[in-house]
Image (tube, rainbow, N blue to C red; front, side, top):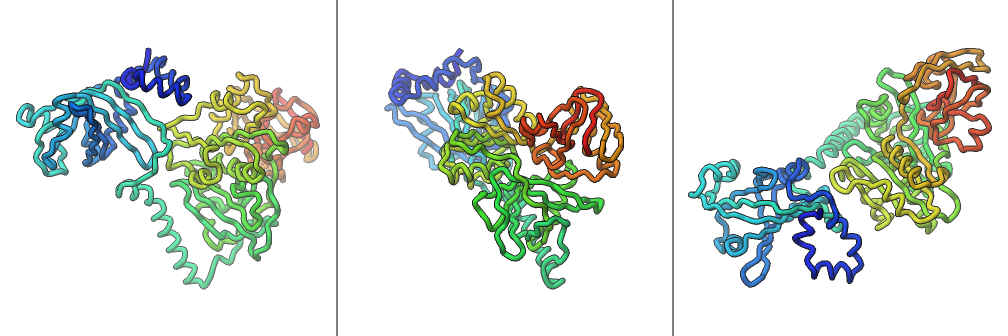
Length: 529
């Protein structure tokens, strides 16, 4: 089976051009696909009904094409069924070029654009013209209530084929309504900052009370809204001095005051260029259903706020040789990989970055990454070009190192594809920005602590670190996701089930064990803690 659009468009001349320019093999998939694409699915229906305009092409008797833009309120192009579109045709400049062409040749091609999200849908079909007096019921069905004009005719298009086009070279543009939606969170933020400025003026200056008790005193010197839910925070030393040097993939423990008033610590990847010595930048996704840290940080980290943070932690580090790197980020997992991209670019080392998010609006740092990496960065969204993990791994140069940060489903997909392709596990390095408290099949566990002389019962849905803290044991920790190694202790007895990404094989062989995520393969562990 072939895709319908290939049957229509892949003429001998087109195939010859593909052969000449080296893309013939890359296009054969359309001629062997098991998806016909001549019936509209829910995805196409939803896309079409949200458009407020489209481009249409017709051809006259002499073979000359004519392209016309048709616009109206969103939804004026109606999906009548899975193979039929229709729209009302109002009186225009009375040249009737498109209408005349269609009376001689009923073929039509449409391109529908979603400029903000850089998507386009191409359709081919045949058109039937229905004059207003022929079918009043159809005219009423296609009428646009908000547009007071006389319908001269309706155009019904039987869809023969469609194809989603790649986003390359589409320049984002925004209608008034789209701009209002995009700017809404920024407007809210501006209002919040204006209120904060008024409060600061009323009390005569910036906040005087520093947050936290860490050794590194930092000033919130900049706040940027990267996406509707992600905010970037620039942090500088209070006295303007240079900050401790960090490598790509380093983390910064920062204090947060939770809703119950308790002071806690959250660890975020430093996303800024590691070569920058005057400031760190972290980017924080606000998770209203999370543990409260991101909400507290969004609330309290205002311009001028002083925070006493922990010292940067080096954990998720780049390899030091010249092997190429493949960076694969999902959502807010872009933060450590952005720093890695800066370091790789500065050292002239080859890399490719794949960045996935739900939509184009959720791609934090998109423009900065385009400027930094150019063709080396590929963006993937759920409603456009999805990330094909096995293909990305297979296309990587020999001996490439892989760095992955994102949700568990991305890490599982990479793990499975790497195993399927027999990649050396040492070449695939992960960092999770969240860690599951438990996994299916976890059972309660008994942990004996030699230093404190305590024995703790760990629930199936509880981490060892949580149980230690609940018991009042002063156990150091930072990330709680198994990425920094701060909470690591030594295993004295029992078989550990390592679930962290911070410890090396050598460290694990020496008995090191991360209490924040790891468990046991048996019913009991003895830890030197």
